[in-house]
Structure formats: structure tokens, C-alpha cells
Image (cartoon, rainbow, N blue to C red):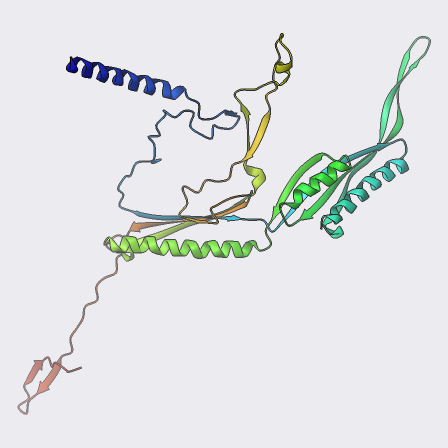
Length: 338
């Protein structure tokens, strides 16, 4: 009886395990459908097998490469907003725009932004036309007549702290300015950033060279070749978008009948460069969008031909010639004490 119960429990455990493994891939790990790519694995059951991107293949040549990345927090930012103002006359249009801009400046200065950091860029100032239909006895004429003016400007606001951006948005929204064009990021001393990266790359390169020497490779018997590059990426280049798999409608709660279609909202998020392939990463913990500055260097050592390898120097010991009174010459080597 005990043996039968034991076999029954083993069979039930096996079936339960198979059921769990069979259902695991259907458990969704994310609720997004990206238009660019899926950031996370789709299910818990999918095993990641390709840890290495390429298999290791022994080679007669030696390749040493170093990749360094620096996540630099910007020293200054510039937000650009677009404004459009219309009016019946050019004077009225210009006065209305000036009034809005002055209100924005007053509110921004109250939040600690200097007047010199607010710049107005005039884009266009053109008359607006409407088509008027003129009916005649045997024909119709469509004439364009001026009905007003349209003034378009961009307002550039420079700030140095990220938390100031929320106050800038609020000041613009209070004056009916909603069109945020872009936000630019700036580094005051980019040369110092590259200098730091070169020093870090040199340290990592020397460590790798020493590693090969410790394994018995004489790099002086190889002819070196070099290639290097550098790059700088800004946050606006790394914003991705996605749409949720499931959408909800709050109006469906209030109605007992009928079908309501929920709008699929497109969301955006910041996806910086992953540092999994880098040897050196400065400021790896990213809290806010940063400027990513990178440098890469690759050294390839090609084994020299025998004719190119340095020849061993032949050491010739000093010889002394002794001439006797009879004229005989004796060649001998004298050991001199050092």
C-alpha cells in the first residue's frame, strides 16, 4: 500500500512539474509592445543560451582591444519652445506676443533664471489670407484677401539644474505655450572628458599587455597595428517608444451596455547605451539622462617573419697577444676582475 502511494505521489509530482514548465512561457513578463524592440524577455520560461556573441577561435595573431565609456552629467541645458500668435493687424499681433513673452520672463526670473539666459528667436511674421468667393452673373471668382497676421517665435531658455525644467514648463504653460521643440545638453570642457578616457584606456591596455606577457608571449616578436575611435551621444538620440498590450477604459465602468474602444497610448522612455561590452565605465549608475562619451582602441599584433625578428648579438671576448723575446706570438684570453 505504501509503495502504491509513493508511486502515485511521484507521478503527480512529475505531471505538476511538466504542467508548470509547459505554462511558464505563457506568463508575460512585460506589458509593452515596442515599435523598436522588446526590451525584456517575453516570458519567464525562455532561457538565454547565447551568452557569448561569437565562439572563441585560436589565432596566431594577438588582438587587444579596450572600450571605455563615460556617462557625463550635462553642465547646462537649453529648452526650446515654439510660440504662434495671430492678430488682425501687425501691431496687435506683435503686442500680444510681447505681452506673453514678458510674462514668461517675469515668472522664470522669479525661479532663479537670469534674463540673459532667455533668448527670443523670430521664425516668421507673415500675413494670413482667406479666400473670398465673388459671384457674378456668368462666373465666380476666388480672391485671397488679408485677414490678419501670424507671428511665430522660438523662446530659448538656458538652465543648469534638472529640477528647474519643471518650473520652466509650468511658466510656459501658464502663458499658453505648450509646444516643447527640444532640450539640448552641453558639456563645458569636453577636452577634459576625453583626456580622462585616454588615461583610463591606457591603464586597461597596460594591464592586458602584462596579462599576455605573464602567459609567456613576447610582444616584441610581433608587429603592432592600431585603430581607434571616439564618439559622443546625447539623450535625445536614445528615446524609445512603446504601446501597452492591454488598454483600459474608465468610461466602461459607468456604462452597463455597449462597446467602448480604449485608446492605445504611446509612451516614451530613455534607453542609454548598455555598458556590458565595455572594459571601463565611469559614472555607471545613471539617474537622469546623460551625455555618453566613449572611446575605443584596438591593437593587433602580427607575428614577425624570421628576417624581421631582431638578431642576437655575438659577444666577442677580449683577446690579448703576447710576443716573446724570440718573436713567438701567443694568443690568450685574460680574465679581468671587475
